Amino acid sequence: MPTTLNPSQLDAEALYSVLLQQVKTGLAGVANVAIVGIHSGGAWLAERLARDLDLADRLGVLDVSFYRDDFAQKGLHADVKPTQINFEVAGATILLVDDVLYTGRTTRAAINELFDYGRPAKIMLAALVDRGERQLPVAADFVAAFTTVPPGQALVLKQADTGTFTLTLA
Ligand SMILES: O=P(O)(O)OC[C@H]1O[C@H](OP(=O)(O)OP(=O)(O)O)[C@H](O)[C@@H]1O
Ligand SMILES: O=c1cc[nH]c(=O)[nH]1
Image (tube, rainbow, N blue to C red; front, side):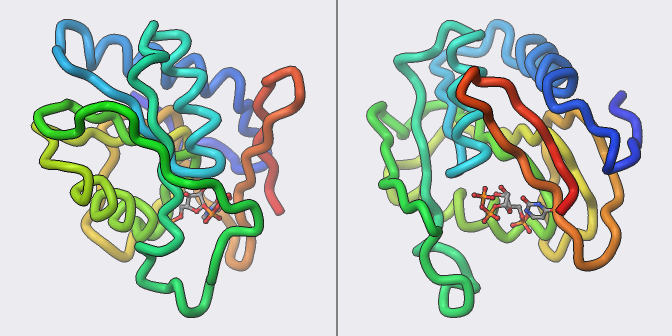
């Protein structure tokens, strides 16, 4: 059971190991699995999960910018990356991956976009950190840690050139 941690003391690499173990257990024996990461932090995590789970040929990435309900305010991501889904979505069990789960609006946008590619058998959600304060009825199936972030601050996942993850409070 993930614990509630101090947001300034989150060890992203340790949390990744926890998430990997949860996903390994949760998807054991499940057929037709694919992994889809949400650009950008979720995509880094999804890539590593796909490698560690031997699912590199079943990896996709979503840039949900156009599907956001707040697109008019947020606009495009500074580093836009096209959505890439190179597997059959219809009938697949898709593990959607994001770094931080907060309002749930990014997840809603990602599910909408996925359905434009076909009707999955099931979508499951994995998040490295759940910081609560949801604005939509969204819950993750796999979460490495829960935390509470002070108002006006955000948790930011970074990936070094070596591939190492860090989480900082900004
Ligand atoms: O649950 P929500 O309130 O939607 O917030 C979570 C999302 O916010 C961040 O993405 P952001 O759009 O900041 O882009 P990033 O991944 O590049 O940081 C984060 O990576 C999640 O995707
Ligand atoms: O704290 C937050 C909230 C939304 N998205 C993030 O990446 N961090």
